[in-house]
Image 1 (cartoon, rainbow, N blue to C red):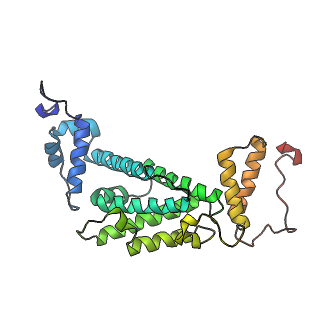
Image 2: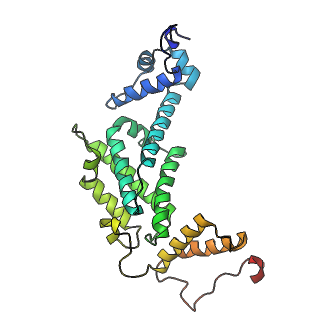
Image 3: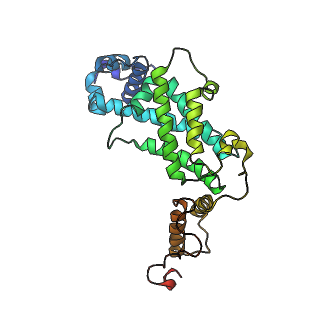
Length: 282
């Protein structure tokens, strides 16, 4: 252990060597302008020796993975702290803008987080970010405002969000942008609204999400199935047995993934018989 690894007697306790290494690597990456950061730079700034880095992280790549994980924690925490409104679509738009703002204000870290992915390299915290979006979209589905299942819509929105942020980073100028500026960036706003229109039952809601109701009467049977599916999954009604619930959700899932005007019109087909005969679901 290096001399600088521990606080001297009488001095305020320092952060642990592990935390100092993560903080040093994060600071150096932020200031690197995309250039490589050496192990020596990291250990010097952290005030530890190279063996300390190897002890905690195995190697420099292990430290970079810890930096990325910490970045995802901050990213998910920032999105989770957004105060929710009565309009889920309005909140989804704000989650998008918060995502872009985080990327543009943490350029090198964001590139490390989202620009170096590959097969089998999907961090757990990316899934958490996707689930955060899915929860908001679940609220929209329960209100009959989605034309796609929440999980499918969340994946499409997150994929577009990441792509737009990486493209903006490639075009970024030195002029700082506030959170309010992000909502007016043409590429971000246009792509955000376009992908939202592709998953909502009433595209006009994207331009006026605070309206909170679907214009033009009742939602289609697809939107209604998605809404009922989302409500049942969250409420677990006691009136249905576990077998009945699973069967009903399976039917709703089929309906919510069926094209408008497709199979399943009245008189053309009957619901599938439960395994074991009509009495199996009782």
